[in-house]
Length: 248
Ligand SMILES: [Fe+2]
Ligand SMILES: [Fe+2]
Image 1 (cartoon, helix red, strand yellow):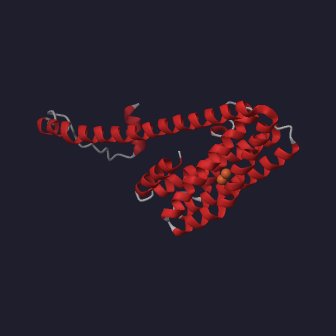
Image 2: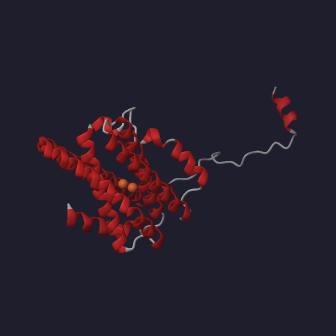
Image 3: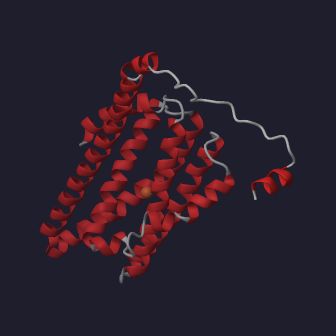
């Protein structure tokens, strides 16, 4: 993707970070992704039978947990959420992302596809955060936070790549290439679906606005209240107990 993706992210970020309420929305989404990644890595640490990889997955999980806290703190600093709501949302996060249908991402993909996924996803995150840093969006505090987490993200993309190269040396090059191709294709497809959904939301808002602004108003000119239609409620001034007895 490289240059095309960077240009696209740059163009979109110039608009999205400046829309009212969107910095909170985007930072919340990043925080949730970091939280989901924490669960994925923790589950992988538990499932792998390689002690050296277990250690790396576990370190990775701890980093992602810390990143989720950084993002949540930025959201709270921007007034997007209070501490109580943040705790409530966190409580439901495990079932809504990370472990889906009782199966972790590692279990669903298997080790080679999982490593390919982690490498590609982390490389894309670095690319995305770098564009925000270059454009100094959305604000200096968030940029400082992104720069703080960047070395961790570089570790997250480097060790899976090293692992995949080891597999290549073991004669599993074809399997590695297929896994990388599959992950990239799936992420492209998911990105397209997300984009289509967002366009759908915008278009439905536009059509509903036009419907309410152009089509509905003429009916308000023709319409009038029927005789005996709207009436102010009659107030019964008797004490409640007396009124209730008279109904019985
Ligand atoms: Fe992260
Ligand atoms: Fe990461």
